[in-house]
Amino acid sequence: DAGVIQSPRHEVTEMGQEVTLRCKPISGHDYLFWYRQTMMRGLELLIYFNNNVPIDDSGMPEDRFSAKMPNASFSTLKIQPSEPRDSAVYFCASSPTVGTGYGYTFGSGTRLTVV
Amino acid sequence: GENVEQHPSTLSVQEGDSAVIKCTYSDSASNYFPWYKQELGKRPQLIIDIRSNVGEKKDQRIAVTLNKTAKHFSLHITETQPEDSAVYFCASDGDGGSQGNLIFGKGTKLSVKP
Image 1 (cartoon, chains in turn brown, yellow):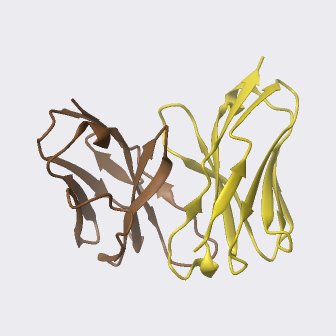
Image 2 (image 1 turned 90 degrees about the vertical axis):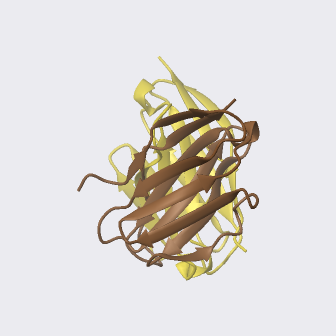
């Protein structure tokens, strides 16, 4: 298995532009998570899905952020319009099931810079 | 909800010494406690985990201990090497994992000096 695949690895965009981050989870994993990592705030859970259904989006900072999972093998995180404070590394992670004993597998992340 | 506190935030040791990172959690229903290592510019990677029915688990130079009564767990690294330098995150499944997500500590930056 190729692991969790994220694209792009790096994204530089101008303030006000739309940004779309993509994630392909490990095949057979039921859960998909989007995290944002910054020096100041550490790892923040933005949203997660179970069987393609959003379970908890309370971590999504504001309406500019949206996430979708149209099928079991693909998810997107969209920021529109982007702002400089959105600059961070965004990680996608997946896990096989709920409950005890299953850790996440993280993707390589997307480093977003908004100028 | 679950709250995970991690200490210290930074730790510097000499090569060959031991390093200990401690985490506390709040939800007594928590059952699963993984540790992740994140090297500079890389993804967090699972290095060891422990379940609530086990008090200690070892894997070569790393070990994790769990005290459910006190609601804390620790990562122990012995004979540290420069390649152990990284940020380490503890986590808890909170509420027995019924929600499906992990709650992470803020991380400990470990520096191993040659």
